[in-house]
Length: 244
Figure 1 (tube, rainbow, N blue to C red):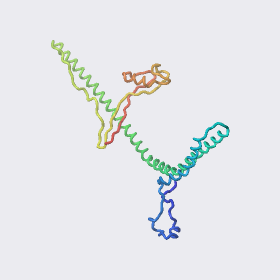
Figure 2: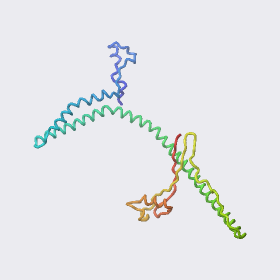
Figure 3: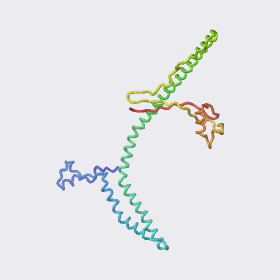
Figure 4: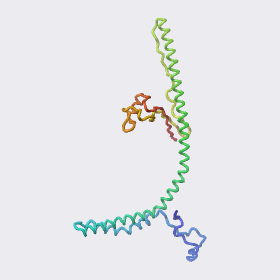
């Protein structure tokens, strides 16, 4: 990669010739690789030629073979100028781009590992959160069954005693555990239904459009359908991380 920092530095011998202390680095002459003025100079030398071509095309009419040939020559020349300008741009920007790519690749060697850490951690948090949700549902089921059992007992007692029945009420189970919080941020779990195709030929036609009609299937899932032939419908949990 081109080292711009050493551009136009005096050699040791040259510094001695010009009476410059060869050991005094402060006297080194350097080129600024981001000098926009110098870069523009390399393009501006084409300005007059471009203006002449523009005037020539504007003032020309094509009504004969010779005029068509002349216009073709102008246009091919103009295309050649574009190639020249592209080469200048590449010459100026290539070192910067190569430096940018080198930094990007080096940075990615860190972020790729961080991405793996996040994916791995999210997977574990997702599994934990989903297990907690299953436990919550099981506790809710048991609490509901216990409430129904007590309600049946109370109804039987009321009927035997000849008094009005009393409906038992109460909060059964907490509906949501909320986000997991830490000092640096929080992790929220979203549990939703998803599906995958296990046998495309077995999927009913109303759920097909070329292949599978995802919109129709998702609407069916939202409506409470949990079994569709040829599909596996399942719950999945997704973790969202928010930093403070």
